[in-house]
Image (cartoon, rainbow, N blue to C red):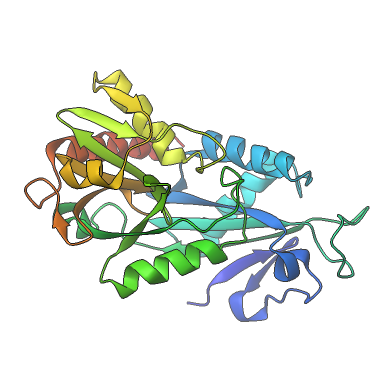
Length: 285
């Protein structure tokens, strides 16, 4: 089946979708993006993703390409046209097409594209096996709270981690873990979840937000603070979260086994709680 994508008001076969070389997203990385999960044929975490996208757009003074309901309708239409039951929808908004110049152009229509990808999220084998993480220097800009499409720093960090035999990288700055290359980072000390507090230094992860809400509702203690690599190596558990990983155990960091080398009970509980929440949202529409 030919994958159908969305580009600037049209649903097209993927090989027919073309972007101008003058699009500022292509030239400058001038835009923002979102990735939302799909379960049982329904987009979930809708409210939080719209809220974060709205913030990212406002922080770079970029207009919505359409109203929020129309944006959601594009997501749903892509799910339908591609018969997607489980996976993600990626979308991005750029400042649009203009002559190459650094200042923001006036009266330029935003560019809007989206596509879906099928993925095995619920029954990911890594959920029971866990993943390896490698630490890597955090080389990114200072506004990491904006979900920018300019991801060269993350690409370099991910490649560094993969070259070390790891599935994910944990970026480190001044001795402290900032976050995963494409995920939020957590350690578990006893029964307490420790994760870095929100600031311009990290992305406000949607799964992070949801997981911390679920932890609070079920009486799991949370401590939002910086933690060092040394603390992570000595932790009882570690895990990551993202749209594609949900909550996923980290069983090794830089070659050191974490806990007993398998995803721990707090990690597995958080994954189960998140699964229940998003499946309920998907079934309620």
